Image 1 (cartoon, helix red, strand yellow):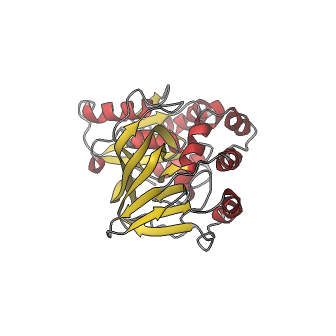
Image 2 (cartoon, one colour):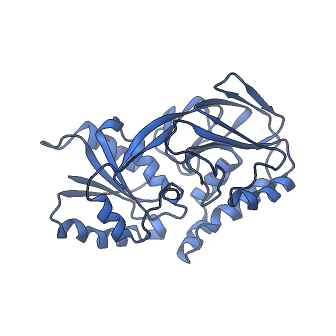
Length: 323
């Protein structure tokens, strides 16, 4: 049985249309499948959790779950998994950023990709990130789940500060919807990033690394725990990230004027920005970040609450993929 989690709103409402075409693959091959169309924030999490806690009679692990949507839909589905050893995951990226798939050399043709997935074989195991809110404060983001857990998984990246503020604004951005319709959705994050950067507050923070070292920034701009290379629609913040080593690349910018960060952004898009003064980088398994005031936090671009104290850690090869 293939459980297909479909975001009909992906790619500016074309998700349902794309799924209708791909559904013929399951019919042609006479495979058992069941589609679930999401209706709003947090829906994919609820669907997957219910599938695992209340499995169909006669269905045994591993559960084969196929997600058709963007990075946000994939993140929600992963957060519904109660036992990763019992799941084989397939992913068909049709979002505006698709940072998860960017590293994995997926076929661009969705039919070809689905053919690979429905072989139903485990082809790779990938690291997974885990975020713990040591403290959560209101307000909630403009688009948030009904309930906010104090832990969240992330498969691409988790960040606090500037990059999370960009994601929070993009979630309900009319600009994003317009650019998606004309095929330029990836520009959304760049345009919002410039605006957020110019109005960023001066806030100090401490980064406690797993070797006991503490990095203090008098003014931090963003801190990102990168499992994969890219976030924000193609910014190559972690060009040497290893997707299977049980560690993430902790990248940050701080103690630098907005003008220098503006200068750094184009270089970060091509993965060549560590040399710029104020950019920091560590490869760690775990880190705790404390900020003077609560800031937006994201997991794979999904933003729920602000926090002034979070812990991020990497779980080695936790995610089993079918392609």
